Image (tube, rainbow over all chains, first blue to last red; front, side, top):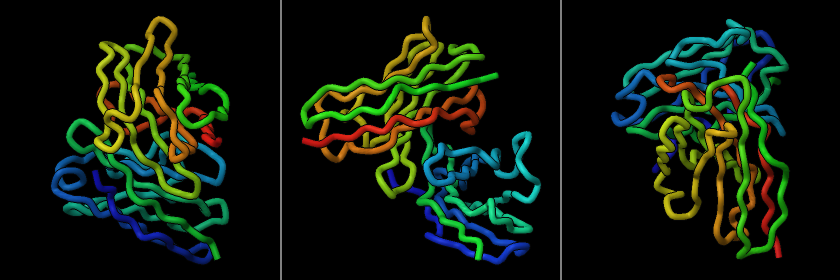
Length: 109
Length: 119
């Protein structure tokens, strides 16, 4: 069961915007609006920051936004802050199970 | 408030049996799915399988089918992940996460259980 494809790393300066892509197939991202994104700081459990492609859980900064086009989902972080430095994983429903992306390390320069 | 608490770190020898747990509180276990996620050292997240509290339905990701067993006991709001014979390659952090049936995102996570398999 192959993972969704993400860039290994993305970097940006404080205040900038960055976008992380997540490419799947017509069996996962392309078939369902069930894409979620997770932020993981070193040594910590993942935390959901986007669900249902573009919805934010209560308490998550509105600097995080999500979108989808075809079989590719995207996470945008605007007004980049030092605390955003972490690993980010996309996740999609795929026929009764779920699949994560390969993960992207965000570095704040 | 929903809380998910996992059992503590384990150090085992190859070939040994292991069962780790994930206990929830603050919600009706029967209304929720529990998922198990593996994170090998320095690597990404991988879904291992799912457990549904209402009817004990279990689903395994293809890579983990036959390698582990997922189960649960709704009388104590607890899900389990077990290995009958550990290998060194099972060394990893294991997380459980929960989602209400009908949702498709995982909003409550355990703190993780570190499993180390070493002779």
